[in-house]
Length: 122
Image 1 (tube, rainbow, N blue to C red):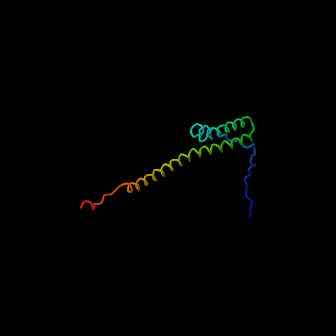
Image 2 (cartoon, helix red, strand yellow; image 1 turned 90 degrees about the vertical axis):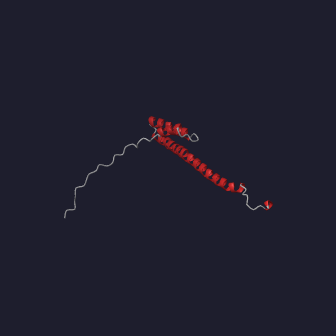
Image 3 (cartoon, rainbow, N blue to C red; image 1 turned 120 degrees about the vertical axis):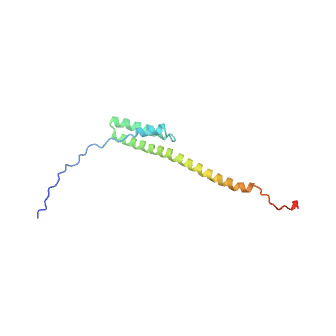
């Protein structure tokens, strides 16, 4: 019994320099122009520009550091700009519902119902 079989010869994976980090510049520009919550979009834009400058100059480690900060501030700006209007809308809706229930309950309190049997009429 022949247990040998032809094996594929795979070359070892090539290890080169790690890929350049992303600078998140487009996301930062979008946050700066459209969803600038507490100026976090502007801060993200500053770090994205720093990351791009460091990437162009060849300092990959500093580019990674600034890219990480740009991504963090972009995520915070996006989350804040999406969650705060939703929270505000929820508060307005619950406030309107509460006020409408309060108004319906107070109508019965402020209306005086005249009864048909008055002792003075007789």
